[in-house]
Image (cartoon, rainbow, N blue to C red; front, side, top):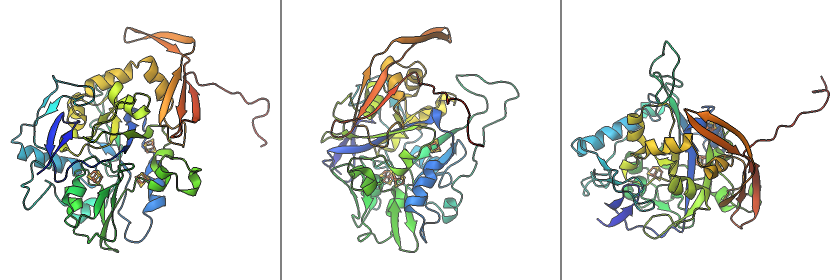
Length: 410
Ligand code: SF4
Ligand code: SF4
Ligand code: SF4
């Protein structure tokens, strides 16, 4: 089997194909701390792409309540159990040796879903969910682990839950693509979006079995598999609504909680990201390391990153996001001046921000949090589109406008 480089694991990894020559990669950061679980993203996707017969149980975007909620039911518990078995219970990180771009989280020596497969009958370790497991997309909504009788405080709440926002990760090394016997799944070189060729697909469901995130879904009315298409007409700027420039996807641009930011990052032939600190996603993932991949140990090098919730148990979060969790939470709670400014840019523009800049402003507040002095500066963050044109400008101190006189006509 060829070897590819997986920077989430900090090491080379066996994969069915050589690394592709993706020039740019669809990537996003979700701030879990801000999500209100409103499901607007879910319905924005559903009402755009999956409202037809045969797509009733298809939720390309879903938001599940952790730790009990999951769609399809128990998806992560099942694949974690299989990996644990394949690794003899020894899935460990050596977080002592980190390099900012090639191994930011250290080195993972356990077997990935590709390395745990036999390579003969199966290319990828996985399982096919039972049909019933797709029927309740939002089970255990808002269920906490317990009801505390007294007030709670950080770092870990006694009763806790958090929302996990999920869509296809447009992985650098997709499990779905590696498993397809018809080679019907492909990754576009211009933006890294992973698509299923509906002409080639014969509905064998090997991709459904292989995607560890369970984001390929079978459609009985066509006998084929479908998945998130990354709203590619919006990414291309070919949708009439986009004014010809790359525009955020439906699920991103509809986000009420302003938790989502999306961009395209430049990539190297070995799958690492070309250093580009002016790109907001590159900055959050590589410079600040405040956003982390979901279950990096699966080995697909997913391209959606999460700012972990501050209040959930760290052990649970480390299993989910790897060893960078403590540092990411620390940096989110006590952000640098540049990070605080960039956080204002989430959902401030429908057009995709390819680069940002921060113009420093005056200090306007100071206080103490947990014994640490904090200063706030009214910096301005400016976002630029794919052509380098300014598309958005937001300040840290949000202006307040008072409507004069009568409030309304009633
Ligand atoms: S998340 Fe699943 S469906 Fe999406 S690219 Fe990765 S392996 Fe394929
Ligand atoms: S990117 Fe588009 S197709 Fe994919 S989940 Fe979001 S809205 Fe749906
Ligand atoms: S729209 Fe945004 S805030 Fe609402 S559930 Fe989706 S990700 Fe969370």
